[in-house]
Length: 232
Length: 385
Ligand SMILES: Nc1ncnc2c1ncn2[C@@H]1O[C@H](COP(=O)(O)OP(=O)(O)OP(=O)(O)O)[C@@H](O)[C@H]1O
Ligand SMILES: [Mg+2]
Image 1 (cartoon, each protein chain N blue to C red):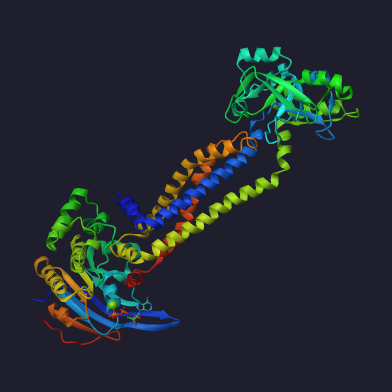
Image 2: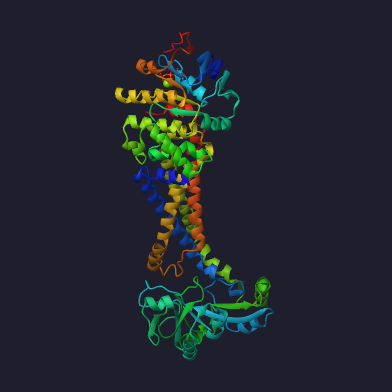
């Protein structure tokens, strides 16, 4: 049975203007991602991977085309509506973890919950659950500076899942990690897909990381090629 | 609640930078407060003047006298309730350095006209009884350690000779802004001595002090007084006490303007320092602001973080600076008491301190907040590493 796509992209164009010149970055992208799919985006540097990921996650605006995520055409949302939409539907994992250094692991994970109407007690419950998913229950009160890179990325993953979003976007989540830590993170991401049913879109340069994904798509000079959908 | 915690933690990320900035604001607010207090001290005489009192002097200049005979004519003018008179004595106590105001006045009417000088009744009676008696302000008596009954000798400058006086009373100011460094004695003592030594200068007064029934009558009475003595040998100029006091200050108005300008320059300098601190701090955190936005936090939250941090730092500096202004003003006022008999930090100065720190805090945060709020998330995230 064919699954309903959770991400639906049609005829997507994006360009940047630099020194008065239009530079096309994404050209006529068409992409469907099914629910509980783990998709890896690969391609050379500058091919537009991050740009595409940002568009899917609603932190950038397309020039034209349709981006439907979890049933919403996000190209039609205003800035404020987008912010609200992101807070409830998308979890973010970045290459450099991007934790707030003056907040503890607990407080970092709690951040996205501050935008919900949850009480302090409810927030604590959610944070504790998320921290146990990433196996860092004993590091709640540590500051990012007191954690290893791999641990920081796990805190970032806890922050990404704490609001229980439908889709998680990750831009080179293992790009700054050694192989062992990277394995850890990838395993964790697989678990998010298998156990929690999350949909993950991951940009990566690392073929090993991409190997964990169900599907690998290749971007080259802004064009999503007809790479055979590699179901593993 | 949470945003306050984050503001506080952000403010102390670079402890040294924050500490130095707070120290800078403290010093700026302290300097600002002291300069404002100097300006206030300058106008203390004007501030303390009563709206229902007039001063009449020779229309040519303050140094020309008026005949004592004018007293009764002035008293008859409609609206006048009381008249006193006096001379600036200009005596020197031991050394020219020891400057303080000293006057010869008609004591009974003078004390009625100036209820702000509060004398204990027994001392007042003792002073009125003793022709060579004088009364001095509390601060003046303290400074020279004079006690009741002490003889004090002033060397005359305008009225030559060695003059000895006996301290009979010490007055306190009714309000905080009353000068407590004056030296007042009997005009009769001066006049009788002049009758003997320089008869031509006898029966002359330097100025008349007039009280009117109602401040609203001040203008009419002034005109009436001056009209009365028009075309006489000594024409008069009558003005409100405030205008009279202002006349002394207007000579030094340029200095006041300069001090006022410097006080604002101090604030502008600290604004530049603060703006620099905020620009540095926020520039380092653009990626974090981008992350917060990514998570769904709006521009208001980001701006709140930046304005909050800026205001937190300026408020910390303002509070310490304002607290320090009091001991500093006390020390400064004590050292400069002969120039500034009144040197109090006014409530107004504290408001100005607070206003200055709010302005500095807000202005310093405007550009950093605008940048942080308007940066595109994708660009903000790109700044990492
Ligand atoms: N704000 C911007 N202004 C102008 N050009 C931009 C901007 N952001 C991205 N670009 C350009 O768009 C193209 C795609 O950038 P993008 O970051 O999506 O590449 P990428 O595939 O993620 O590369 P990498 O693997 O190095 O991260 C690049 O040529 C880049 O220079
Ligand atoms: Mg990229």
